[in-house]
Image 1 (cartoon, rainbow, N blue to C red):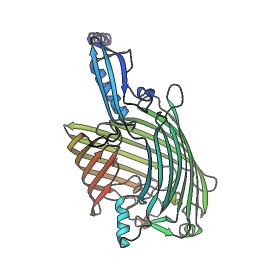
Image 2: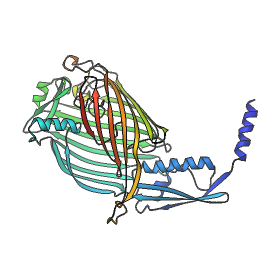
Image 3: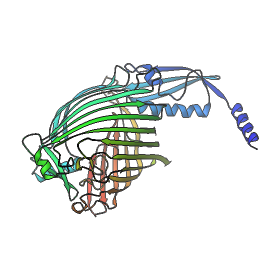
Image 4: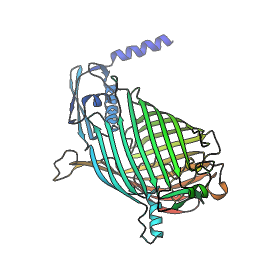
Amino acid sequence: MKKIIFFFLFLTQLTQAQIVVSTITLSGNNKTQNDIIIRELSFEINKSYIAGDLEKRIEQSKENLVNLKLFNFVTINKTKNKDSIKIIIEVIEKWYIWPYPVFEISERNFNTWWEEFSDNNYSDFSRLNYGVFFNWENFRGRNELLKLKIRKGFKEHYLLAYEIPYFNKNKTIGINTNLQLFRRKKTHFSTEENKLNYLESDTFNSIDYDLNTEVTYRKNIHQTHRLKLTYLHTSIDDSIAALNPNYLGNNLPKTSIYILEYIFEYENRDYINYPLHGFALSFAAKKHLSVTSNVKHLELSTKLEKYTEPYKRLYIGSSFKAKCSTQGSQPYFIQKALGYEDYVRGYEYYVVDGQSYWLSKTAVKYALIEKTTFDIPYVKMKQFNKSHYSLYLGIFSDLGYVINNQNQERNFINNSLLWGKGIALDYVTYYDKLLRIEYSINALGEKGVFLHFSCPF
């Protein structure tokens, strides 16, 4: 029976028309080297494909090129000639050199900054950052990234970073490295009633040095392995150590930590900044080592994302993320869970510290305006004279839970189910810009309008 099925499939394969990709022509990549584009293609020259399979490969290749974040627009056309096909790939490159001033809020989100700002009669500008950020994308046309940052204000940040996606012949191995310095005159030293307590002083009361190097191995278009080594040195003022002896653990005024991390990523989303179709999976194992403090635990984390379009212009997105730690007792500064980078919508005013947590997010949205492209008049530069925008209206529901074995009595939403739901209006435009306006209700009965500038997942 198996032989019959195999023979039938083999016969079906033979009877389907085969198309040979005879040529691949690139256009518009004035800065980007050809091999950077060719590396992302799911088809090859002088190779035969079934017509339907080739169409899928062309669409996948377009998504891969968009996710490089090097181009504003990508178009793939084809010209058929009997049993062969010519493929023309046209791109419109972004502007890659960005020396721009830094003027930003130094808070977890816009709403927490605005609440603090209004409580101080709209006169306290101490939580603003200012400076200069030099960002050179697609450096040398090889998708390299060079960063230099000088930021003053509430949270000083000095950064020098360099990233190269490939340096070997097979274009599979890359390296990223950066050196950072953070200095603060206003440092949060504890969490009470799920809000941060700050110590403000005339001198810097906390300083972090961060040096890390990451080696990447991209086996194929969708899979990436990362191995990262980080050296972190943190020092705090004696006042912080007195206010919270567990800030660095063991009543220490300073500590040094080595972090070894392995990350596996499977990426198959259509647009990573605001996905509508596809699937993504990641897994990470992070080991902390310190001679002085009790930071020696192992962290395991994972994240899954899925996006579908069950009906025309109707989209469903969902994600699940979880982290667990092998050590229950940890210093305060390393216990960040929800309310920082990850959060349950509707709880933007709160932080929930802990050693382990899980977070689930679901959204259903309708495209009020599908992706619309338009020309910008009187602008001659190709990098800026063509733009796009889209608008989505949706509903969402987030669930989260944080496990905290320390200081539960001072934080009332630790070790409890967090639930936020509401409606959202998302505006997406070129250069990966996104504006989200959300009306949320949490399980405490609190309601509010929140403003965000990144994808909720």
